[in-house]
Length: 424
Image (cartoon, rainbow, N blue to C red; front, side, top):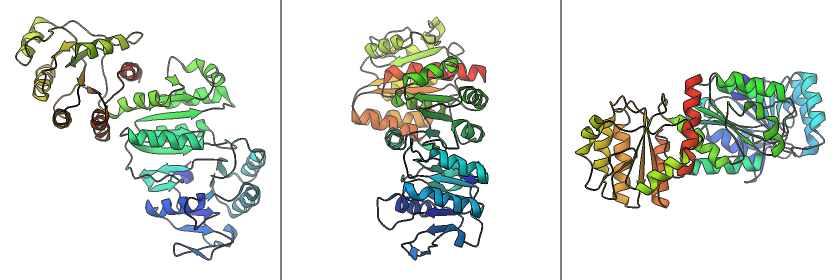
């Protein structure tokens, strides 16, 4: 796997000068993202690409090639693979072709013949910012420190990435398994789960060959990283049933990313929740969402109420959830957080803000950033509203504060995090 994620040199087979073509986008991304080793474009059409000499075949390259990325038409792939194998290339990514291609068996045979690991066909590629690697057609600018995504589908994978970025999430790794002629999810889990920059691993899968091997690899990886699975069919969900008590399995990738987001912040080391809101209705909706979860909303002691009473506007509810009424300002929310941060009665705080006042939203964002290092307890903000609310949540996620706009998914995310940290 090291040659796949940290190659010393890369050959791009089927390179192109036409924007939008796979061979153009991959070459452009390798250069733009600052890959540190030599790149060898392979083409019968060009003598150079972006001022880099082209070779007609990888066999014409005199130096060693660690990784090859193939974007050539599907019918050329077997010949190209034979040349790569003869050259001693260690790993190959096949972007071209179809997942259910009849060439899959041919690809598997060449892989076994030369001991060359192959990702694909129809792979999304590999994005691994830790080693300045973007061997994919997707333009990404993150610095890591977030989620790892393993996606079987190339097209859906692109949409999931676009969605996640719009939600303020960043990726520490992206790998497209495609048709899985050789490399499968279990081959990737061990490597990615050892990476400290990765906070959680999302797997999108539609096929499963070796159920026992996959389940074993998930359980081993869970010792080091939380895993969320997006199952693409009822059949897959049935075959993954033995894992249901250990990992979230969903067919909704938006929910999956909301669950992954909770691992961006502080460890959640208990299940007792203080809910603080400027709307009793929103607080009640959150309480309802906790059904079938392990979270608890404990009654508050008289001492706790006395400590927070000074900050609570007239008409506030002095029980958990704390309803601070629509009069609650960012300063009032701050006072509640400061007075409750050392309480032994609660383990985490859910802050729910309903409203679209741009000034209040900006102040809440700044307050949460300022208090992040002052409060040991996790503070999970939920902003209910339109575009401005979503934008604040997105900015906070980029700053590693788990934030939400969908109140229904908060309880699911917290429940998995609590159970994960309790057992690992």
